[in-house]
Picture 1 (cartoon, protein in one colour):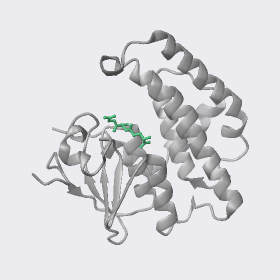
Picture 2: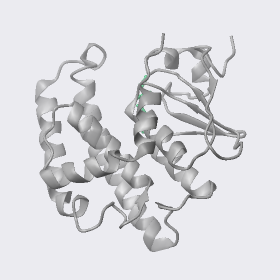
Picture 3: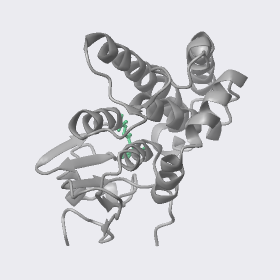
Length: 229
Ligand SMILES: N[C@@H](CCC(=O)N[C@@H](CS)C(=O)NCC(=O)O)C(=O)O
C-alpha cells in the first residue's frame, strides 16, 4: 500500500499556475473544504488524496502523516501541517496572492486576522458546532447529551448575535472590502451551522451568501464532497 494514499485514490489536480509541491489529504469534511477552497482561490496546483474522516483517516498509514487521524493535512515539500486555520494562513503567507485576495501584513492586520481566526475556530467551531456534532450525529462515539447540545446551540447563537454588526457590517468581507482566508473560515463555519439547522440572522446570511457565491468555493465544495466509491 502507498502509505501516502491509503485509499489509493490520489489524483493530480489541474489548475492554472506552476507546480508547487503541494499535497492535501481530506475529503467529505468542512474542515478539509477550507483548505481546498484556499488552494483554489490561489490557483495553486496540488495533489489531492481523498481521505475521509473515520474511514481512511483511521488507518495506521494515515496516522503516520496525521498522528491524531484528523483531516485536513497539507504537505508542502517536506513540511507537514494539520489544522485547517493554520493551513489557509500558511498558504496566504507562502505563495503569491492573486488580485482580490488579501494577505494581511503588519502587526495590526495580523492581529485582526488572528482575532477572527481564534474566534471562529475556538468559539464557533470547537466550543459549539463540534460539540453539537459529537452529541448528535456522532453520539454512538461520544454519547447522547441533549442538555449539552442545547447549551452549545444557545452559545453559538449568542456569539453570532454579538458579532452580527461586525460580520454583516459595512464591508463586504471580514477584513474589509477584500476577501481573505478568514472569510473561508467563517463561511465554511456558517455552512456547518446551517446544516445543523441553526437559523442565522439576516445580515449574517447575506454575508454568507455573498461569500459562497465565489467560483472557487463552488469548485472546492464539489471536489471535497464528491462521492467516493
Ligand atoms: N481543529 C481541526 C479539526 C480537524 C477535525 O476534527 N477533522 C475531522 C473531520 S471535519 C476529522 O478528521 N475527524 C476524524 C476523527 O476525529 O477521527 C481543524 O480545523 O483542522
